[in-house]
Each structure stands twice: as C-alpha cells, then as structure tokens.
Image (cartoon, rainbow, N blue to C red; front, top):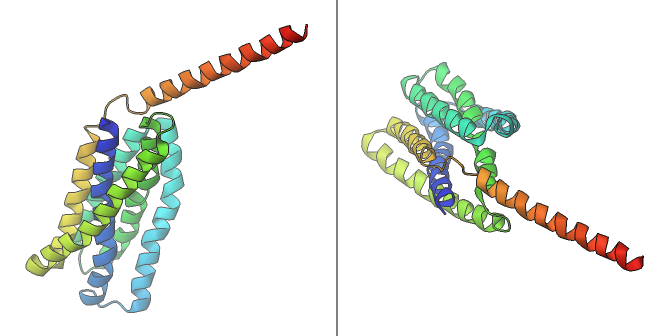
Length: 212
C-alpha cells in the first residue's frame, strides 16, 4: 500500500532526527556550552515539555484542518529551527530554540499515527501501526550512529545539520502521499458500517414480522 510505505519511510526519517537529537544535544550542552548536569536536565525537560503541550494541539488541528497540513508545517518548522540552532550554537538562543524545536518535532508523532489509521483499511490498523513502529525503531537505531560518524569527522555541529537534513527528507516523502489517503479508507469503513447497520435492521424487522 502506497500510503503505508510512504508514511512509514517518512516516520523513519523523523525518528532518526529525534533519536540523534536526544543523543547529541546533551553532549553538545555539556562539552561545548559547559552546562552542569542540572542545566542539561533542565534543557531536556524543556524539550519534552514543549512536546507535551504541542501534541494535543497538533492532534486537534489535524482533526479540523487536515493531517497533511499539520505534518508538513510542523516538519518544515522543525527543519527551520534546527538550521537556526546551528547558527546560534554557544549562545542562550540555542537553549531557547531547543524548546521551540520540541514544540514542533514532538507534535507530529501522534498526527502521523492518526494519518496511518485513517489511510488503513478496516481491520488492518494494528498491522499498519506495527509496520510504522518497526520503521521508527530502525530510524532510532540508524540516527545516532550516522550523526556520530559525521560529528567525529566534521565536528558536533555537523550532527545538527544532519538532523535538519533528515527532517527535510521526512517532509519530502509526505509530498508523495496520495491525495485521497484517509478519505478512501474512511469511505470504505462507512460503507461497511452502513451495510452492517442495514443487515441488523433487516434482521430485527424480520424478527418482529415473525412474532406477528
């Protein structure tokens, strides 16, 4: 299924961004900015708290204005913020941008899963989400090692350029999503529900006629 493959690949690259960020952000804060363990923990807290705030907002907006619009906008903003972080390295702006990044990067997770459920035929939701989670696990494994190789050869800021690149690639795959992804599956589901309702209604009417 094209929607399943496309969303899974996009989710793989997004997870590469997330896992590499969680690996190298503490390293950068400790080694390059000289932060204490307490302040590193505070920065990571800010990153995750921003995602905690953003996730329900993004989920609600995706229900009202569409999954595609929210996914593309949040991934685009994540890439912009990551690019800005490479220029703000070593300043207080870097720390502030960490919170902004958490707002956009973590907001898209639930929307991708909801979109996958929308685009999946009835009865296949568990299988589709399982494939997506497997793809995410692959991305989580590849992201840190790839960023580590770049950091060893070109410096730790190269890892952040890598993060911006992976989220851009994730967004590009969204462009290949079928325009009707989600609507067709919903239509099939509504058809099945309608047929089931009609059969139940007919059976009940037949039961009533039998009693008469």
